[in-house]
Amino acid sequence: SVFPDQLNAQHESIDAQSKNMSNTEKTKVLEILTKIDSLAQRRRSEGFDEIHFTWGVVNCLLVTFVFGALPQHFWLLYLLESFYLFPTRFKNLIRAKPMNQALYYLDFCWIMNFVGVVLLLLLVSDALIMDFSTPDIFRQYIFTGIFGIACGPLLGATAVLPFVTFLFHDVNSMTSLFIHIYPPMLMYTFKWHSSDINEAWPSIFHLNYVDEITFFSGAESVMMVSSIIYAAWFVPYTAWMLLIGIDLPRKFRHAKQRDGVTPKVAVYDTVFHSSMRMGAYESFGKFLWNRPVEVSKKH
Image 1 (cartoon, helix red, strand yellow):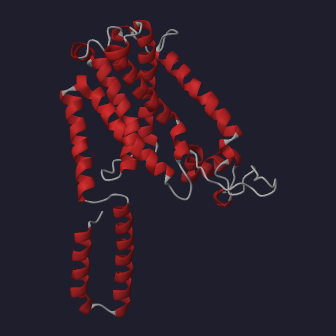
Image 2: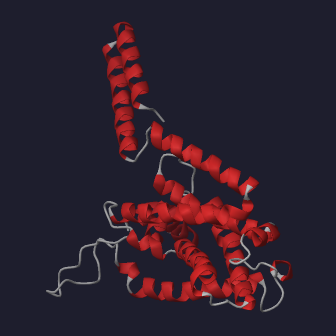
C-alpha cells in the first residue's frame, strides 16, 4: 500500500539512480512504477487515503473498547454503525460495474443482519413508544434462533469467505466484515453479560431466560430454532434463484426482449454467481464431473 507522497519520493529516488542504469533496466523500472501508479490511483478512487485509513483504525479501536469495557452498550454501537454502513454499501452496490450488485442484499448474511436491526428497533420502540409488552417466551425463541445464526454460519463465514477482510480504508470490505463478525460479538454480550444489559436497559431487554437456553436437545434448542430460521430463508431464496436469479447475469440470457428473439441484457449480479467466479465453479466441476478446469473457465 503506497500513499501519493511516498510514490513521489520513489520517483525522485529512481531519477537519481537512473544515471547508473542501462536502457533495459530503466524501461523495466518505469514499467513497474507505472503499474504501481495505476494501482495507487485505483486505491485512491476506492477511498484509500490517510483520512479514511485513520478513521478505519480508530473505529476498530472503538469497537474493541466498547466490546471489552462497555458490553452492555455494544448493541447501540451495532445499530449506529449499521445506519451508516448499510446505505453506504448499498449505494456502492448499485453503482458497481460491470453489473449492478444490489441483489447481494438477498444473501443470507445480509438478511439476518437486517432482521437483527429491525428486531432491536422493535424492542426499543416497544419500550419507548408502543408498549406492546412482548412476551418473554417470544423473546426467548428469537434470541435462541439469532444466537445460533450469529455464532454459526455468520461467524463461520469469516474463516472461508475471501472478501471478509480487514481493509481499514475500504467501506465495502469493512461492511462485509461488519455483517459477519459484529453479530456474534453482539450475541456474546447478550449471553455472557445479560445481567449488565438488564441493569442498564431494563425496559428494553429481558434476558432472564438466557441461562435456560439449550444448544442441541429439544424443539426449543439453538440448533432447532436456528435451522428453522435458515430454512425460512433458504426455501424462497432457492426457488427465486432457480426461477429468476440463475438467468440474470448470463451473457446469453434465456429471458428475451419484447421481440421474443433478442436476449435481455445482463444487468444484475447475484452472490451465487459471484461465488462461482471465485473458483467454486471450477472446483465443483472437477470434483463432481471430473471436468478439466480449462473447460469450466470457458463456460
